[in-house]
Length: 229
Image 1 (cartoon, rainbow, N blue to C red):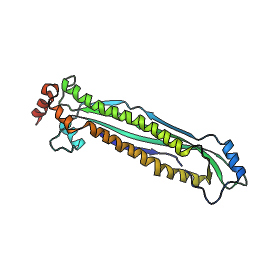
Image 2 (cartoon, rainbow, N blue to C red; image 1 turned 90 degrees about the vertical axis):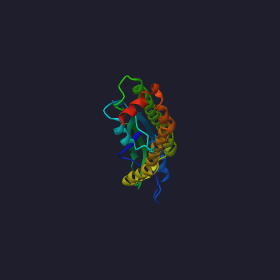
Image 3 (cartoon, rainbow, N blue to C red; image 1 turned 90 degrees about the horizontal axis):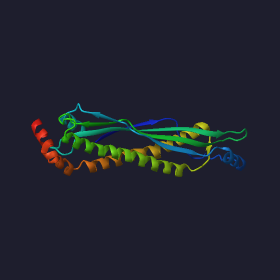
């Protein structure tokens, strides 16, 4: 299993009031008139693209296995992307030094197409091919489950973090503060989800699983590997 990570960061924000404070009247007006904070976290399902043009040696070189004598029979690659888009509803009033704002944040967690490779030595439709493909589909399912779980937890966490708070400040300052908040809190969180996913994949690719391949399909995989040496 091999993952890569891409992050697309668009316009963003968070709070930190200056020494200045809004008047009680202005704060109450902002509270009443601004639309509620909106947090949307969605996922985009990933199609699967199957490749059969890589050999066992090709896949082994790509995966960098920790065991010296292990060989890669199949490989699942996926690219995890996070897009965070922001817009804000703001109010300004003559005589008030601070703009007030509530954010609307949309997060899209996506997986670029899964690329599932089964080594070219295993003929499509053979028991060996089905065995390796079934193993790779376990990796695909981990990716799908992780994506949905991450979206659920990120949605809950962001809604709890932002609440329905009204933010006050100069427009450029509001933009800068929320950008820092996203970068310092939520982007590391997404990165941690990726690391957690890698651990789940390692739990599939165990030494015991590699050893089981030698006896699968009545020894068909072992014979192909031995013949390819």
